[in-house]
View (tube, rainbow, N blue to C red):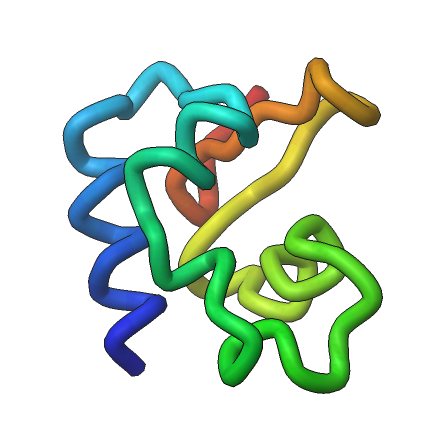
Length: 71
C-alpha cells in the first residue's frame, strides 16, 4: 500500500508520464527487496498494478503513466 501511494503521488507530479529510470530514482520503495520479492523485475511489479500505473515502451524507454491514461 505504501508503494501504491508513493507511485500515485509521483505520477500526480508527472501527468504526462515519467521514464522508468526517473521513477526508480524518485521512488526508492521500488528498489527494496521486500517489495520486489516474487517479481523478476521492477517492470513486472509495476505491471501487476494496473489500478495505479500504465506502462508504455520497452527497456530504457519505458514510461509510466497514471492508471487509465489514454495514449
